[in-house]
Length: 110
Length: 115
Image (tube, rainbow over all chains, first blue to last red):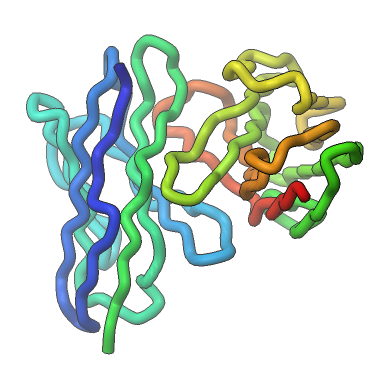
């Protein structure tokens, strides 16, 4: 079957670094994406990895290991505004549809 | 105005009512989507339209009926819903369906409560 696993909640303090992991199981694979959703808001696209390695965009980085069916989102220099839910998503190779994880609620504390 | 706009933001309806959700995108995209978001569950893909043609109906009950009159507008017609249909309904668009590096742009959603 198709599934994505990510932690349900993570708590960290301002200025810290936090890593949100995502493992996936799909029939075929076309890339791993990350989305951020603030409470009451729209999910917004953060990053996309099609190949192995680390992609850096400002304070956020995303990593992919296709051989391990694993990726993570790394958030550095955490700010209060980073408190949100973070979803990993994988494009399934068989259906070409984007499948989302259940999301990780990140709480950044002062 | 830019982005993806959904109306209404909130909707309360009885099980015998008929209502419609509206979505409009100003991004020039060719694919539009309806997703259902329930607490503690992954985003569930409901319908996909690519160049105004429906390409996905993800086993959605017939009480949900989509309509895509053009590439910029998408509707979700609702009738005889059940309380378990209460959720956040998100509209999204992308340049084309199925492009790996083509991200989804979401609207703020319609919070639906069925009483």
